[in-house]
Image 1 (tube, rainbow, N blue to C red):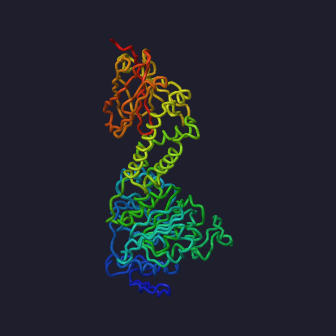
Image 2: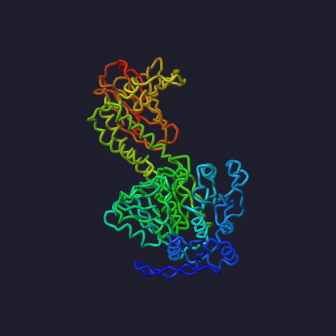
Image 3: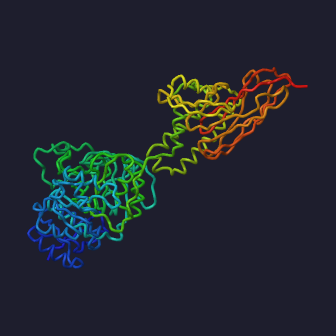
Amino acid sequence: MNAPVVAEEAPDRPDRRPATALFGAVGVDRLPRAVAEFLAAPEHTPVPVPCVGRPDLAHAVELAAGLYAGVEVPQPLDVGVLLGPLDLPDGVSALARPLARTWVAEQELADAAGFRRRHPGTLLIVGCYDRLNLDPVRALLLTTYRDREPGLTLLSGRDATSVAWNVAKQYARPAAGVDAIGLFTDTDRPPHPDGVRVFDDRDFEHVDIQAEILATRWRRVAFQGHGKDDSVNLGEFTICGLNPTAPARTGALGPRCAYGLPCYKPEDKLVPLNRVEAVEVVLSACNSGPLADLALYDPRYQLLLNALDGPARTVVSAVSVHDSDRPENVAWMHGALSGADSVDVLNASLAGSHPYPAFMRFGLPQGDAPAAPPPAEHRPDPLVLTVGRRLTTLLTSELLPHNHALRPRLVKLARKVDLWVSRPTHLADQSPEQIRTSLTADLQSLDHVIAEQVAANPENELMSYPAHFGDRSSLDPQVREVTCHCGRPAQEFTRRGLLPHVSDTICAVCMRCGDVTFRVPQGPSLLAHAQDEVEQGAVLEVRATLTAARPGPVRLGLFVPTYLREDTTVEPGIVKIRAGHERAREVAFRVRFAAETAPQAYYFTVFAVQDLAVSTARRHFGVVPRRG
């Protein structure tokens, strides 16, 4: 029978119990028979591990004793492929066989697209690390990316013995008491949800991170920071990929320590990854698990291989660069608490940032894991983007002088919008509902201020936007035929801003009334209706017709030219209405004229303010002498 590996009592872990015969150490020559005995009675026979002569794997088996409590045959994947089966010890293929329903020859991988058509479903690749090259793994990663089922799964190791160890770990069932979930991040300060132990750069200054990591049995633990394929930086602490028992590869590049130099970080703060007691390890750093022919360093120093040498049943690593940030940390923590697959969660969260899968899974996905989340899309609320563009034009176009009263408040809102469109805020810190609620509150306040300023001083610099932007624009050749509020035909056209900070402007021109209306794209549309004449001392009834770009509050007002203001009273001053989407609303104004108002031609302007956009409609009329 297999010789059971029994853990020694660790002085710093008084709660460690001796291992039962969960794993059994065997020599390579004994592996085929030991595998046959195990598969015949898995509930009574240790899982064989050919770790004789491999002290690092023997130690990993000891650590595994505290993580796993029994043996169970995992739910198989649909299709399996052995890479380099002749390189693997006899017995490994038999031990791996229950992990996939169907096994096909590696030669079929030469045509990755055709392979997926012939063999749909979940895919398992088993083989030594030096077989995990750009061809065929890249094509398999891409063809399985964004599938509804878990993508590509790998079982590997630095050599054939390590491969056998990682196949054996798939039969281990985590112990019920191993439930700690941890996130160690040097690049983020994420929230601390209940059930997750979170450590960030503030903790690295006063907490012994090395002890926190090595003295805990983790169900899942993630390390996020900068680094290379040999290390992840956590402040002065370092997750280290060196396996000192592994042979160095002649001629391969190594980190400083490969050449007898001290580590670039304090050596007493190194965390050997193969000593981390975790069922699942997530290496959320760029290039933490490169393909074999793309690796920077000698395999002796690689994080991925050191993690696979350790007790972790599942290792999640990054095949290349990625943009993991707050959204991925939050998604991963929520997923870890619910039992979701880490690779599915992380790749789905990053789907809106790059078109390739960033993370690979070494270890079988759990059969009871929730379905993969849909790919995330970084698509902020269109209102946020519209307001952001308007803020850019108002603050950077020189339309408003540096001392304009609106500038401080516009700058403050611009800072908020910049945060709202960033991935960390939009996808993690605030829900879309929270962002929209905050934005609309700011807009209502600012729209009120703008309307009050225009009513008090219609010559406000803001109202010169049609000329300011128009001078820095070119005419769009598309012209629309519309009807002026006088009833005559008019043309509506757009001037396109020539620079990013110059807004487009939309103008309607009537041969009788001139430039009748001005607005910016997605601003409210206005028409102004009134009689052509009004007597001295009488009241001109004005009916403004408004069509808003979106449902919500709109503020309207009316003003006359400076030379008429002493002779007129406008009622009401400012009107606030709630407009429906693309549904016209009418608002009434009354312009009362003094008895001594000079008879002649005049005009009035109705304006509407919504979401920082000001639209205007100008209507000509005449004051005539009082009759009788």
